[in-house]
Image 1 (cartoon, rainbow, N blue to C red):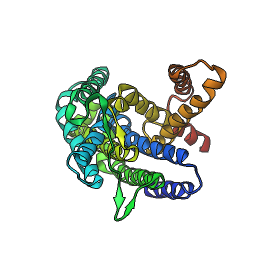
Image 2 (cartoon, rainbow, N blue to C red):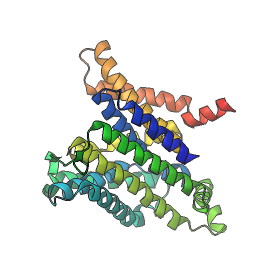
Image 3 (spheres, rainbow, N blue to C red):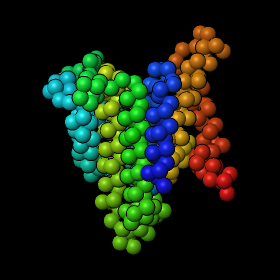
Length: 311
């Protein structure tokens, strides 16, 4: 079921990119990459029942790893994508021994702090550009064909399709059932023989792999990155995408990413018409108000409301 859903999305995007202007094709790429990150976050938050406020850091690790290998080492972005995912997974694995010892609010604060620390590293490490960032990052290519906006949109949604298929298989396996048991009650799951610490660590690493892959594609598609691209605000947006779409729904990750990105674009065009002197802070303010209202009206996410309507 999940595989068919991913293929339908990919086919739809493959048709749309031939009719949409390049700006909207770029938005499709952004939504796809954000959806990919949110799928991994839903695995950790929705199914394992944990909290992470540092997901943007793993996106940045994937982006900077791929960019550094491409610019400094002249490595093809395809290998950079794999390296970005592996480095993000390695960092997540090491950090999991610290962060996952904590519970609930303390875990949220720990992941928040880890995200801030990693962002400071991006700012201060001159080898990866420091606060100036990386520019002229090589794009993906297949033979003589260099990827354009349409190709990047198709690549992003191909990764979403693959990510949904893989996550769907995990969710329906004994591993996924054990994760749900942990989210329902960790102590009860442990009494049934579930190794909660190991499963949480593996899910944390898996969510980092999704983020690292998205970051590597992001770096090459936009050809420029800097530390502000992976700030705390982006981590908050990923959590909002997860909750708005449906925290325990793989489809909800796609819906949440589309809703948050679309709302941001609408406000970017509407707010200046209503308040000509408004700056970007006003757009973030209105976006925050709308998202809070959605969380109040749809506490279990859009997919939950859709299931109720279908029932």
